[in-house]
Length: 129
Image 1: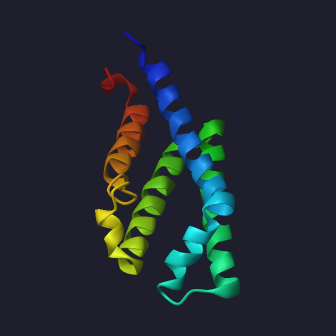
Image 2: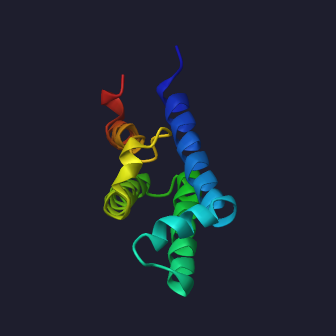
């Protein structure tokens, strides 16, 4: 059986990869998708650049934060707030993302549960067995 510390480390590393790849993808490869989504709410030009750059920066900071293990409970709370905020905003901008075949919004539900589990497990290590 894999030990709890190894599972927690693998969980943090996988979350870090998710956040860091999302930051890179949003900043470089998926930038036009971001512009298209924002344009649906009339967000264009410099403000759209600001939104995409800020979102990418936030994602990168979270990904790097997970690697440091500094105040992880705060990091987990920040992730929950950010994911909920992204989900609400995207639901308002384009609710059809709930029905998208790749599930950009529906994936957030198990991700929120996973992050909550990590938070609870790491704050109560004796209850993680």
